[in-house]
Amino acid sequence: MKRTSVPLSVTLILVLAAPLISLAEGMPEQWLTVAEKTTFEITASHTQTLEFLERAAAESEMIQVTTFGNSGLGRRLPLVIVSKDRLFTPEAAHAAGKPVVLIQSCIHPGEVDGKTASMMILRDIVLGRNTDLLDAGVILFAPIYNADGHEDVSPTNRANQHGPVGGMGFRTTVTGLDLNRDHLKLDTVEAIALASLVNRWQPHVHVDNHVTNGSHHHWLLTWSRAEAPQLSPSLDRWLDDHLPPVFEKLDEAGIPNGPYVSLIDRHDPSRGIDSSVAGPRFSTGYFTLRNRISLLVEMYAYAPYEARVRANKAMLEELLREIAREPRALVTAVDQARARTIDLGLPDAKPSDIVLRWRTATGDDTVFFPVCKWTTEDSMVTGSPMIHFNCSTEDPVLEVPWRHRPETELSIERPRGYVLMPGWTEAHQRLKDHGLILKILDSPVTMEVETIRLTGPETADSPYQGRVVIEDFETSRQTERRTIPAGALWIPADQPEFEVAVQLLEPEAPDSLVRWGLLNSVFERKEYIGLDTLEGLARDMLSDPETRTAWNAALEDEEFAGNGGARYIWWYRRTAFWDESVGLMPVYRVMDPDDIPTSTAAQ
Image (cartoon, rainbow, N blue to C red; front, side, top):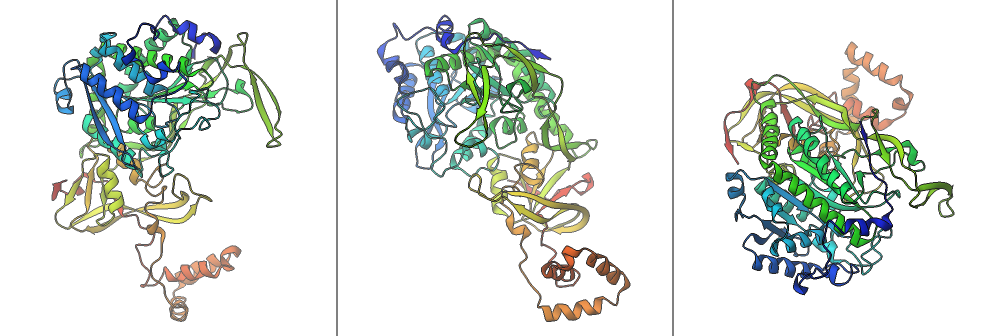
């Protein structure tokens, strides 16, 4: 597979993009955005954005402004609902069979292009322009996701970004967390609010607007999307059918675009680019788990702010037009994806595997990459080699390897569901906040389950996203018959977003509760045994031939033999005083459909 692109100098982009989008000339003053009023030197503040949105809603019966939550400092997270049929509730939208499209901006508030583009689209709708976009269904705009970061404005917040020169917001929340690393673990009030929005509205398509920087090239807009088998086949087919026309329209309008650029070798662009979807902490990975389409849009940071905004606006408009061309096809694709996950998890379904970790296949795909000429030189700052780009209209277009297809790195047999033991409130709350179907056992039940035990945790050297991550551990699984107390949580597999539970509860998953340190007490030993007591017990146990043989074999390991603590634990584990809950996950996998608990109450 090859993807072609027309290389264009960034200096020409504004001229070439102009025919597609009318300029601010002749626009009523009240409908100019702050960016347009200041020749794209300043972006609207939170207050100015809300005022603009409220004015749009007051002028059009097709627009309603509400909020989907509040920031850590109490700022409103605005949500604009646009519907020509006045379908302003999730129930009304889905009852009418309409697609729901969620367009989100400012997850990183320095990357403000999507917000301004969204405001301009809303303005055009108010003025009766581009009304064909309304045929896409119900459109949700979340223009300022990270409201607190949005107000932490400085012209020095993004060193590599060309405007707005008056300043832009800061990347993280008030607590220093990156919302685009929090989709699954839900440590922030903002991420919880977005999950609640998704639970209520169940959008068919999600668009995440960003501004990227890194390598220098001639694509003004880049994009990334999940693919099969990571993405459900029906959603993969929809994207294959409906995304290319969007990008072709942008090409025709003089807006060069291509797949997201992450250099495989940061010192040599000719080695190729990687456009693969990352894990579930990121938006594209998370919405994929929920059987939704998510499109990452990355504007080119080195291009002028105005050029980026107009191209971002054009892309959103062409996507909405493409959805409007065949809206029912999108709804059907999502319905099929959800039904597929339900069917795979039914009690009488054939055994199947579920993937815990994906990686990017190398493959043979190539892309024509309009990269700027580069040289490599030694950095005075680091003392290491660095790449230096020099862009011009005569830059070559290189055919380079393009990595984007997912393949399985680690899979496991799909359970019929999980049991979460009572008392683990952080785990319970996150499952609830993601809108999963949960049931409470209303009486004890003895059943066969697969238990998971963890040992040897290795933590990161420094915090990441406010937590010290568990980077590695050893896992063992075995089938046991256990009595599950009343109050335990049952998470059935026959629900459309079951893979969210899988990624949270399976310890080997990249963003599991274990990885993020939310179940650290599992690894901790709570009791001890005095050495004098253990010494007597150990000498008595040596009379058993099997124990003596095992002990002698253990002593052959010099590192073990010289480690008094390891020797102590070796013997302690063999006594009746050892706490069997050390390392035992409070999550049990139910594998046999005959063992599915039936005495439950829905939550």
